[in-house]
Structures are given as structure tokens and as C-alpha cells.
Image 1: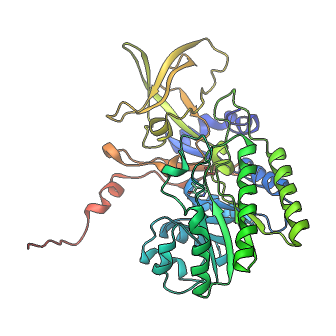
Image 2 (image 1 turned 90 degrees about the vertical axis):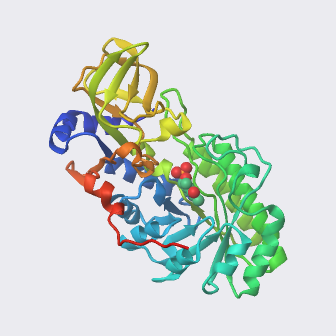
Image 3 (image 1 turned 180 degrees about the horizontal axis):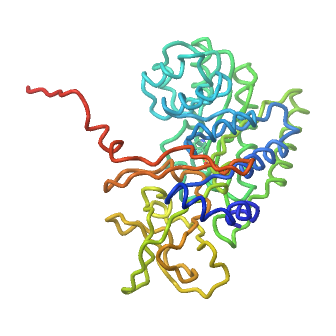
Length: 418
Ligand SMILES: *Cc1c(COP(=O)(O)O)cnc(C)c1O
């Protein structure tokens, strides 16, 4: 189930007018869909006291989207200074920001501590030495090592650059304690785009077991566990969606059991990016060329610089041709204009016959889509539009211009000779 039928029904009747007014290509996001998913997530975990989603800003770093997240009372998961600035720009305070970084520089820590701070999630023990001051609260990112996650995007945790090992956990918290830290959390992120809820339950169970033994050894209570992001989407029509009801029922039961045993339970945090916005965005692009060589190629006015998941991971994104549902199909590759053969949105896909001028809708681009864009080959990132809850359409980011491309070539002269 790619793009939801409701989103399609909202968009289809007005798509040609949107394309005529704003021009193509564009990513367009569905405010109602995002709000509905956020409400469903909150409802699913409502029985866990202190449940909170910290939206992974990197998935869709646009202030208009972050404002919707803030409205839902979500926090923000950040890992760079611009992401901190974006989050604070929509009003996020210290407790609303989880700063999950990897190889964080002193300048980034200084920015994280500035303006009221944030929840620090540290990726290595050594980073404690880079802190400008001891924070009140520290969280470490755990990497469980050999453990099935079976997932190409995250890979095998043993080979992953993230987190600290099982043996390092206790010494890490002891050092933080010695620095005067008094509040603690535990984080992991070992799964990406996972639709099997059982793995996500296992993650929560693993963290609850860990804080049980760490609490006993340290003589402290953990305020929260953070199970990271990684909730999967059904990108292919035949994919089963994540069973959110089963997931929340089982995790809620784990928390209830923990509470019975220890007379308290930590809060549950998560940092979904993809799950919140992925299915609520599309990339709309116009066909500009048909070419019959060894294959039939449909050339469009967007390229992988606007959506690199297919080129980078071989990811499937569903595509439909506006207004041609049900017409006889042919097998085509849908391609952009980059001098790079990976620049394909769809490979050997059955689509209704596309003529130049047709609008193609590439589904599920609401997370890690525009945000992963780049400028290779002098390609400029497209605009972003929001289909608002009141039916209006708003530009929420303009397309890049040639001046933007040249902006970094405009600088004070500097050189040296040794
Ligand atoms: C990327 C990332 C996320 C979000 O992942 P999704 O797959 O989009 O849910 C959450 N937490 C951290 C630390 C990340 O790096």
C-alpha cells in the first residue's frame, strides 16, 4: 500500500493545476496524513506514561513540517547544528530535543549546550571529554553487536559505526556519574525500515532488561529508554504494513511488567522519521522525453538529486501516471537527466504508456527524499509544497537557483605558501 487512497483522492483532482501554478518538479506533503499518523502513534502508546516521539529531523527538515510535529507535541531528534537551529526555530526547548550525534565536534557540543541545552545522547565514552560542562542528563547509544536485525540499510551491528558495546555500558554511566550527571537514559537504533513488529518489541525488551541491571549496579533509576526509529513502510504494493496495534500492545505489556516488578517504569521515547512522513509525500515530475533503445526510457524533469533512495539503495518507489490508471501498460525505465546510470526512479516497471507532458507521481518520498538531495552534475534541488489541512497548497521551500549553486564560490580570498 503506497500512497494512501485518501491522499490520492485529495491530490488527484487538483494535481494538474498545482503543476501549472508551481511548475514541476516538486515534492508535495500531505498535512492531514502526517497529522493522522502522529495521532495514531500517540493513541497506540497512550498507556505508557510519558511516551514521546522525537521526530527524526533528518527525514524531512522543513520548518513547516516541524511545526506540525510541534503541534502534535513531539520532540525532535537532531544530530547537527542546523538541525538544532531548525528545532529551536519552531519553539523546541531543552527537553524537546534529543541530540544524537556521532563523532561530535566541540563546536557542535557548544551549540547543543547553548540556548538552554538539550538531551544529550552520546555515541562513545570519549565524547564525555568533549563536553563543555557536565549536563544534568546523559543518555548513551547502545550497540548490541551480534544480533539479528537483517536489514540492508543498517547492516550488521558489529560492522556499524554507532554506539557502545555491552561491556562499555556500565563504565560509561559510571564515568558520567563521576562527572556529576544525575539523570540517565538509554538509547539504541539498530533497525531501519522494519515492518516486522517483533524486532521492534525485542529492541524495547532488550533495553528494559539492560536498565534493570544497570540500575542495580549504579544505584539509579533510568528516566527513559529510547528505541530509536526504524519503523518500516510498505513501499511495494504487496508489502504488509507494520502492525502498530500488535507492536504497541506488546511493548505496553513489557512496560506494565517492568512497573509491577520495580514499582516504576521509565518513559518510552522513539525517533521515527520515515514512519511519520515517508508515506505522506510524493515527488511529482513531468515526462519530457520517450526513448526507445534496448529498453524504453521515460525521461522526466527530476533526477536522483531530488530522490536518491532508488539509486543509493536500489529502493523501490511506486510510480503512477496521473490520469492514466487502468490503461494498457508497457515496461519502462523512468530516468532523470544526470550523467550517472543509477539515475533511475524505476527500472523495468509496467506503466501506462507515457507521453511527454504527462505527470508522474513517485510515491513515499516524504522521508529521506528531498533531504538526501544533492548538487552533483549541477542539478538543483526542487521545491517543496504542502497540501494543507484546509485544502490550500503552500510552497514551503523554493527550488534552488543557479545563484545558490554558486554561493559557496563567493568568499574572501585566502591562500598560504609554506
Ligand atoms: C535516521 C535516524 C532515525 C530515523 O530513522 P527512520 O528510519 O527514519 O525512522 C532515528 N534515530 C536516529 C539516531 C537516526 O539516525
